[in-house]
Length: 491
Image (cartoon, rainbow, N blue to C red; front, side, top):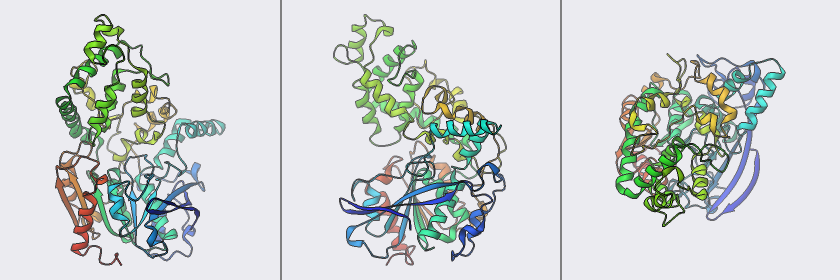
């Protein structure tokens, strides 16, 4: 095992590891698995029905980083492993502070050695960013290739079909091939179903919080279901904090003039303000947004009315606090996780598509006048990507050409096998949040009705991030334990 370091956090023993994995699993030689004791490790190298190996990536490897954490008293014990499938897409694994820093973790370390991988392209796993996109562009030009096509093909290797192969390789080579338990949050649920479609023999049991994808997958259908909830969440926030409706209205009128910039020089537009609603489906995002807006205006007493009076009643002369603008930039910027927006709609691309995705969220927004920049009250977006983001956000600009290609593509890796899911024998227990902003509960339940050996706990007590509290995982774990799902796992 490639051990990088061992250290202690409060209540935890931590080990950092890394291994090399193929950039392109398609066409990889089965010799990679020489000596691996597994029914069919060559499955990792199977070519997708829709996505062929890319000669440009033959033999290239990337780094996969992961941490393991356990209670100090369990160091040296042969504990079963539970691997955390991070939400996102494009998000690194959690950087924990102590044994109590996340609700699910506090429960999991009582029973398991917890594996925290950085999914490929994130964190310390050969991170993909604008610098890399620029380098790929230079490489393509040097050999006479189409830079945007090469970049697009590269990005396709960072979706679920490749991620689950990385993790299966990790299980086989670094964890002795022992079956492990998976815990998926949000996009981690997409990875869960992809994993159960491809490598179910490696999984003893699976848990998911707020993240069962609809199968068959369709970005268009997803946004048709989620945009009404974006409006509902925005209105609920305004009802709770009416003063924010006034602040947002004045801000939108001021930003519509078009001369306000964010600290990085990108436009502080009305639509950039609308992106601040990305977290409205989580707790306590409405309160955080309320506190952010509390500092929007410096003049007078900070209220919208006082700021307007200080500007002589002219919204175009209202001063927008630069500290507030910096907060908006931090909240809506992509420097820390550029793959989040880059891959956002392609997580719904399963195999050969009937039609290109072509900016599904943007088309849905255009069909809904209540989301117009001129509408009042102004509606906020929740986890929706738009073409203009790749023209204005400095961290996303290097991805713009590749996005143009990807949005017209119809060939992606295969994610889900409906026959395998119907015949699934791996216990799958899910928390489905009835009011989930991002993953429609009705679509989740429709999928689960066609997945064997699955159970859903439907609740309106939590938002999308319910797993991070101290109730959800404990309940799912106890149900699985008491049902005998973990009989072959727990000591």
